[in-house]
Length: 383
Image (cartoon, rainbow, N blue to C red):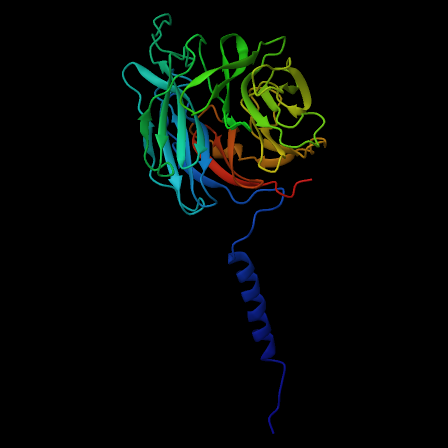
């Protein structure tokens, strides 16, 4: 007669528990409804010259495919300029391609900014050019990336793997024309692109084909030091603050709240800027503002209160007709991780994002002027 004991059952039970834990750790996890998944480092350069590896942008062509472009510094002294590099992923950010050059510097020119956009199967990269030399400086070096003396366009039809030069027409009477936010498409299929220029003028350009742009309306400084503007599109009749089909502009400002303005005629005219204290700004750096495909608004920003404190990125969301949510943490890299670039101090800075599914975003930003990072942000169930 066999005798059954419990002694051997315990190792079996323990094995099952361990397997269950390991399975839960190894299985893919969905993004939190209001949060983020794991960070992915696109590129690292701890020995970058100039002001480092900076000001990225991103286009997400699907949940697994995205391309990131960033500015690589040139040499000490040359600030706010460099050459543009890019990398892409086809596996959801698990790996990124070897960096390639989107726009090379020459012995005369470098590049100040890049803004990306997708329409259909074509990607667009808008670039601003600046001279490397400045004869008015004692060392002859351009120290601020100005003037912007040319605006150029490159396009891609293979999800950002290769790029070609394309013709571009922009108004020629705006000194230091800077694109700092993505275009949006109106109901009549025309596109509206935010710009800012000398005198802290913030406005928009309008186009039918993303290649030939004409002036829309603009807002002068009007007492607010506004710049690096972004725009969103109100799609909901339930939003009393912004009528359906209106455009909302948000720009960094020197007050505690971002400068905001509204257009109800497709960008041809704008209300005066007002400071929205629900959207922290302090004129630190470019924040990211958009409206997603469900009509919800997203704001990603530096949580610091001055330009020497850029170490935390937070985000807020708002449903049409509701108030902005409380701040939620997005990124906070350790200051101790900065060992080579003196400008970083643990900074998470200059966020940009692109929606790849309703309420779901790929977000890119610079960390410590040495790394380009991405992460997912799911606000599809945000209150």
